Length: 106
Image (cartoon, rainbow, N blue to C red; front, top):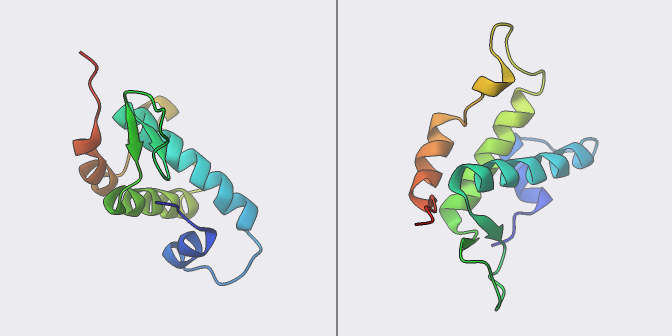
């Protein structure tokens, strides 16, 4: 399932094109963060030849990614002093949605 710039702008309540490049960068970052947390490789549509940990972006994953993009957009100033970047964790709601997609290679 593809995530469009229009959907991102709707989620972030943006009605102009001034920050399209920034929002596109947040999409890449948010997908990478979800992939990192779940140990999955996300695809809009699964290819025929895919890695064992491939995951198509489902409706709930799409919502989680959109929520994460909005979080990044609203908190683009960074972290509060005293919080290290190494301590960054996904927002609890996003984590709750994506947790069931975690891939554990045995």
